Length: 350
View 1 (tube, rainbow, N blue to C red):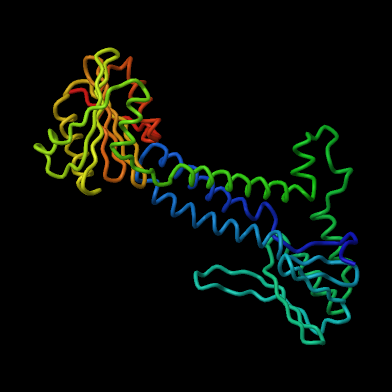
View 2 (view 1 turned 45 degrees about the horizontal axis):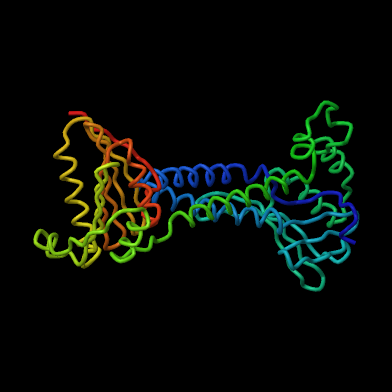
């Protein structure tokens, strides 16, 4: 029976999801952009965006799977994707609409019904579908509903003749078609799946390399690896292992340090940053990137020099080159999966 064309449907539609969709999209996109720029502010926005997205999916679920289809002498109450109740008019003992006020002060109208067999049901009524619920209540009470039908036809009816001849395909599919909300909801779901997939893939933990692995990378790209562990231990007792490579042309100085702990690596990274920032007082531009166990800073310095420091867990990379040969540094970092994800630049000019 439910496959026949129904008269009316009491359900939330696309318009009822516009506000929460906009909020979720805005906060999720802002969080993603700030994350890609390496700003810690993305965390707060991501929390708000996640809550808004959760509410959006609840709203979408309600739109798709919580509704009442009204037919000529019965109605179908769909309660979930797997459960629906078919109720004939003559089976209903009572039906009514009640306003319920939530703890936050907002009010909502609910349609209730009780059958002679004791089956109970209720449905939150979207404001724009209140007339449909009112019509159904009056019909179930045995009252004349012809005036209700005329009012609904005049207020909500959209006939083929009402569709402009010059309407675009988009308008025909999304504005005048009953399936428009389904297409839009499907698009929103796909959008968030793609967004969260990208964020997940770009926010995982990086795997720290060992000095042996770094030495192999250096030699793969034609550099001689030099173990300078003992030299560095004289300067910092927290150094466990270290390896470096240098080249006169193209100019590059690349050093990998393995510390005894992540905290030691963070301390070394902070110290290196302060040295770069204090020493190079003119025309310094810094690019920053960080997430989880990864932090990097790039320095575009005076005299066309370029430096970069990277920390992954308990390891630190210190590298320097000229601006026109920085791709050699990027080459090594990319091979190690230590390459930076974003550039959030700030300048120091005096």
